[in-house]
Amino acid sequence: MTETDTPAQPTKPPSRRLIWLLTVATGASVANLYYNQPLLSSIARTFHATPRATGGIATLTQAGYAVGLLLFVPLGDVVERRRLITLLLCLVAGALLVVGLGPTLSVVMVASFAVGVTTVVPQLLLPFAAGLAPPAMRGRIVGQVVSGLLVGILAGRAVAGVVGDLAGWRSMYLGASAAMLALALLLWRVLPSVKPAAAAPYGSLIRSIGTLFRSEPVIRDAALLGALTFAAFSAFWTTLAFRLQEPPLHSGSAVAGAFGLIGLVGAGVAPLAGRTADKRHPRRTVGLALLGNIAAWLVMLVVGHTLWGLAIGVLLLDAATQAAQVSNQARVYALPTHAHNRLNTIYMVGYFIGGATGSALAVVAWDAFRWPGVCAVALASLATAYAVYFARRNHPGL
Image 1 (tube, helix red, strand yellow):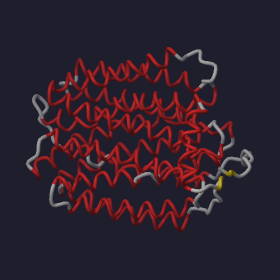
Image 2: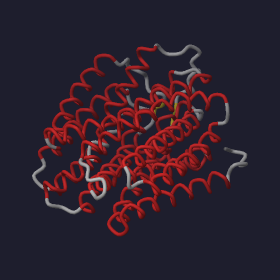
Image 3: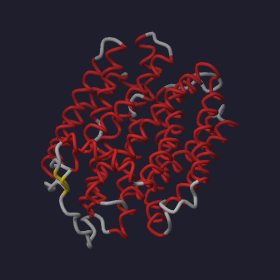
Image 4: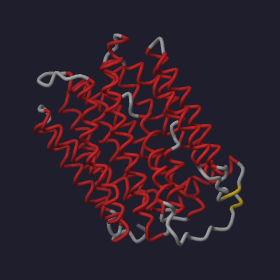
């Protein structure tokens, strides 16, 4: 593989306008992955399907995202990003349209997988922002853009819950399709053209991901901890609509979406976690975030039969997950700049494999043991993550 010389580190911060544009675009595009979660019970009623069957929509969307990360995000190192971003936004608009018009559950599930595959724009925008930042400010700028990511995730759920209640779940997907076309036009007109950081054939580029994975202990550690953390996070959001539907809560998709608004408080943790990562070793922040995640699930295990108990749990869960995500990505973006897209691919593929696994296991646990089973899946994942964190705390390469 032939790569260009490693670019010089930026010495001046990028404009606030550009960083805000990247933040908003990241949030708007990532929301596509999460519209389904508060709508699963409504989709189940439309197709007269079981929770276990419709839960597959969330699992397939996240699995598709992992595939898209592997196929498309590495291209950000060798292809002009504005063109790639615009193409992917047009493709996801088409996939969202098929979900909204899908006549059967099978069509909706296949199209949901396609939504996941093509919704990888956020992971092209994040390395772009990180590459613009001076090293001393990288954590802060990554934290701001990642806060847009969290806002998109949580606000997307809230919007989907309200639209689902008022106009039906199909309307949410049709509106999202139109929004992605508008975003594609905006970014094509506004984003600067950036010269690729490397030159390589596609096959060589993909093979180099394995080389990076073997040679960088930081990326292996960050990907594993991220996967286990996101597995627990996904377990909650995949089963929340089903939990709210059952006694004693008896609530619908609008309430499920409202929990996304509660979790928006966690978005404020992103810049704080980024600044902390700039001042101290970011892996230590990951350890604290894992303890916060475990505390959140213990709260929801004990008082998850009440709306206030779930609300407290969501606040803790989203804040702690966000802190872990920002800190892990600050670790990733401290690695060589010319490989940022491929390193981010490794991290996010692991992250969303963890999310898809957490969703799948949570649906099975819900079917068999209801809420206590979901809590057991999440706590087991987080306990494993903390055991890995603690065992490697003195590893010289981390």
